[in-house]
Amino acid sequence: MSKNITGITFYNNFNNGDLHVVRTLIRHVIKTFPEFKYKLRHPNNEKVLKDLGIPLYWHQYKEKFDLRGYYLEYGILNFNVQALCHNRQFFDRGGSFTIHTFYNIFAKTLLEVFKYKMPENILDFLPYIDYELYDIQKLKLLNMSGRNVLLCNNNPLSEQSTKFDMNNLLSNIVNLFPDINFYVTNKLDGFEKQNVFYISDITGNIGNDLNEISYLSTKCDIIIGRYSGPHTFCYVKENLLNTKKTFVTFCPPSMLYGLIPEKWCDFGVRSITSQTSNFLNIPENDDSIRLSKIIKILEK
Image (cartoon, rainbow, N blue to C red):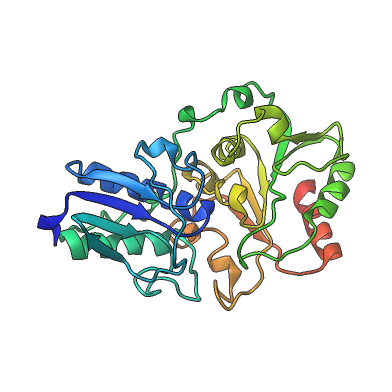
């Protein structure tokens, strides 16, 4: 098949976070096979993967759940990079949205199409963003002394996380911890506190700001989120392997993603190395329990 290929189009019919987690794997393919012309095909904002430097062919998919691993059409290898591809072979109930999932997807396609064997150090393929290609100038000017918490209060688009009113949680903890700076991704009308900073107020009207939020996350001590787009973009190598950083998630047991959330709420890194961020999961769907556990984390 490889002799008939003139270009490669990476495609994904899902959301922003599904694209972010494969960006380093895509870089590896481009570097390994520089002879091809590359394109992206997805229904999301073109800024999401701008740092890859390849053009986007935007499309509205006909079938969201495309289980093919790849297909060849008019000399173009259409390379599926979503978690369900290859007929869900790597999307199992023991950790279905981790670096292992996506590494195995790329490894299988590259072996079958090009007889190419992927390097075995999976940690090398954790997401990496070239932040200098994004609008981070104003974020660089922030005074990040003291303790800083990034709170991703956007609603998740999957069942990886419990759905609840996160703004209730925010209003409680900002009053209890006036000395902590809280950087918030989704602005609340009428809610203004001296220690609350809305990211959109800092960056200005730049549209999609997921990569900018990711940059700010690398400067924060604690990242709280529910697998929304902004939260998923915090899963970068600098954060995941930083032993001084803490991730807080709200992942319940899931028949789709896995009955033991601890196996996947860390993006799978703890199964590879002990030198990781601290990952704390709160699975209970109870506001009072969530609040008490968050308080204990912030008190440390």
